[in-house]
Length: 352
Image 1 (spheres, rainbow, N blue to C red):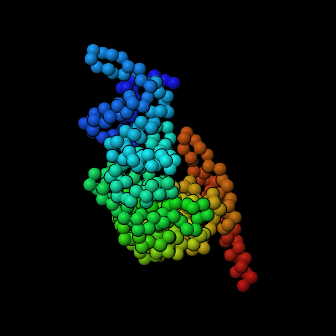
Image 2: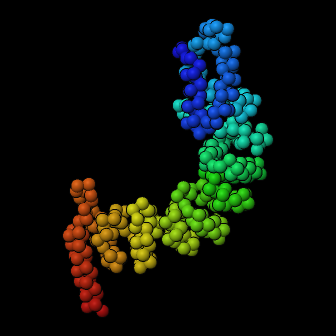
Image 3: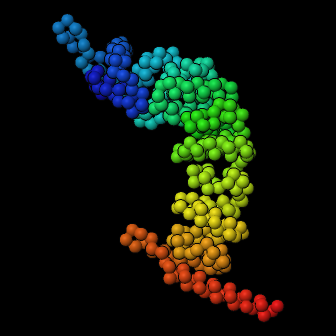
């Protein structure tokens, strides 16, 4: 057991609330500091010291683990949710995310009050990550907008809480990002309630770097193709580079090529290459930036499979922190391939 004084305990509670983004104003803290003090005095082994006419506890015998339920009780008191706290504890709800990081959102009255209590507890027990991910996206919003988003979320979940479940997954996979702030804001309650599982999977996969215009385009795309299963992630570059028709009809072969360059800035180059030669294919290591910087689109589509394989195997030296383009070696292979092609063309003409 470790001895704590009251200030240490209160400071620990305040620190957890601050780290969780749930620290209220000082006047609220002062009020509930007194209440948690009285609770500790009544429920823990306290050593008291008489100072004049006032009995104040000097030290409290408590283990570090015992501070954790005090954090939950403190936040539950602030939100007038002690009854909910006890019911969740009775259901063995795990409030701990990791060391001193608690699922305090579950006790936020602005959140819990929008649900029937039985429904709310059921959602926390069976879709906790969906609830936590949603709350995390609205936590720092202005209070009025936060309450509006909570209302929208609760309305959707009370109409159909199964929207966040993927019926084709073998492990009861949840679409944990479906109900994010941005999805509720840009797609709205009606769209989500009427959405197909294909649309919901896409919403669940969207990244956090989309602009307002990107969201508008994605909504138009999903309305036009409600059963769309995109072969590549719908990030900002993709949604602004490809037409809706291209995204809907993209082949597996082309998607493999695009995925190779998604992170290196050559998506548009590969698209140009495929427009020049729709049947284009290459080894996995061919579409390196060092190769694409050396060769034009026209040369690339003219290369034989053997030449592309040989080029893809050329080592790219790393000198002084930079990958150096092996221009001479690449051009040597291109020149040899060109000669072989001309020789083959001449041979075919003679046979004709």
